[in-house]
Amino acid sequence: MNRMKNTGLVLCGLALGLSLSAPAAQAVESLKATLSTNRILVDGQEVRLTAYNINGNNYVKLRDVGKTVGFEVYWDADTKCVQIESDKPYTGEAPVKSAATKPVEEPVQTDVAAAKQDIIDRTNAIRREQGISALTVNAKLMQAAQVRADEMAASGIYSHTRPDGRKSNTVTDSKYTGENIHSISELYLDQQQKTLSEAVVNLWFNSKAHADNMTSSRYGEIGVGLARGIDKDGFDCWYCVQVFLLDGCEVTWVDTPAMK
Image (cartoon, rainbow, N blue to C red; front, side, top):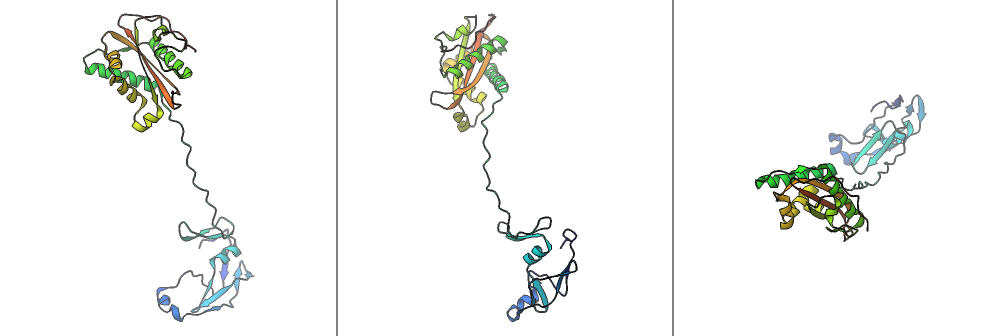
């Protein structure tokens, strides 16, 4: 036993025992316990501890020693062992363990910029597989696609018609644009175990009209927008937009999000 808080324990003719030796166990039936009359001193001061004489040895309860000397002793039901904590005062009680709390799940955080780039990369990978030149990212188209995603998320209106009733191509000053849109619930992403960019590109590619836009050789530039909102069924979702521009055309102006 370590010296606890520099407290010296003097046991006159006393042995601290928690179990019997093998030879003693064989003769356990013949053993008798009698109260010990030996004196017990702690730091030179006599203390009153109940001790028992068994087969010539003296035994005291470890709890009594802890209480007298001043260290913690308790039975740990979880580990099924006696715990001694020399740096804590005696209570004799196992500490109350707080119930394990389930960590609060944070909403899935999507790196929007990375997701946009991945949509562009996946779209261009499909084009290359079909022998079509890759689309170039256009900053104005990126802005326009984001305006379209934002206004759908804000209004809850999932449509190629803008919330104020205008056509989708009024988001820029060019009439030579095409648009893909999709609303994907986060529940769907969880169920499918797919990233947002992977899921939306797959869904677009498996729809002929959307795939035609993605693989059209007439288009030379692209912009992508993503906005988080609520779908018509009340689920958290992502509004996804691709805006394409005919090769050789130009966009110089982008509208602000339309309201109902």
